[in-house]
Image (tube, rainbow, N blue to C red; front, side):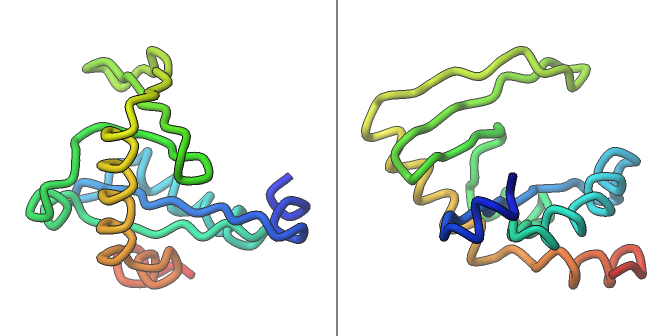
Length: 120
């Protein structure tokens, strides 16, 4: 799906904010990202401490076309509880700003994997 969509000109990108040292789940995600990156997605990584210094939110969210926002709800055991569609324009603007700030400071997947796991 990603390869077909990016061939048609659509863009898929994300920043994963991760705690250090990496958890097993984050290491697995880092390994898997090589395949979606290979299909055309651009996944980048940002460590949690610099993200906190940038005052980025401590919740997961998706932006679609920079104008549709879905905030993810996850419990203390890291179980996904569902997504909430946010329609407030000011909230959407804030999340676009946070996305752009995270992107500016994030590291390409391959560079992050090489530095932290010796992988490419």
